[in-house]
Image (cartoon, rainbow, N blue to C red; front, side, top):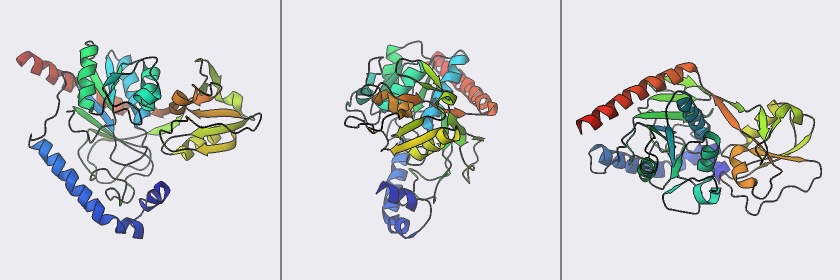
Length: 336
């Protein structure tokens, strides 16, 4: 079903047309909800520090988490003390909680666990990201900026900066779910657009190219690193439980690696009952996000971090808008 929908979303064909009435209903509900927030009938939580939301308007993977990593690392390098909030998709818990060093992906979600480990920033998860933001500030009073991983449509959390990420498929056929991939109508106002393919038509926001790739080294469960170049010529069993596993496999091949076996699994797959192929001599290789769950049962797996490259002009815009948002927050606190 997922593959059929994904194919249908690339064009305005018969399948997409049959789903248009549901998309119109979805669009009406989305517009009504946004209007209620705009009128103040539904409340938004305004944090005491600036909030940056990294999200998208399409269903499926767009590369939000690697962008969140890049933004957080940039902020840390420039003297900020960022914290991260997330819904924690796919976790078995439903409360608001901190992501601790011993937290499992089942408890907090695979992406929050990855963000906490890879950035060292404090991370909180909650079904309502506004609740996670409040808990983060209560627990970590030194935080001076919050980065929200996903949540462009989570209007209960007021935000100062919105970053919208697109993969190379753009907006697909341009229709709303389920007739198309859009969670909400596009174009819509955002502070910046980051696009892996052509820039989506219609936006007036500053747009910046997004280059996705692999880190030069794979990571072992013990934290040691293996140069990807040293794996050339070895038969590899590549597994990926992300929205677009074929992208990961293509990037591995682009590094000159030999993939004897590839295995694409559903996004956020838990790996509880998964077993690698019994073929002797094949090294198991996966994404960094999958390793959060795989290493507990298969510590021999090598994880290859997905990385993004963003132009300096994007970070200059982010810095300028964040400085403006911080000044507004300080002014509001002083007048209060």
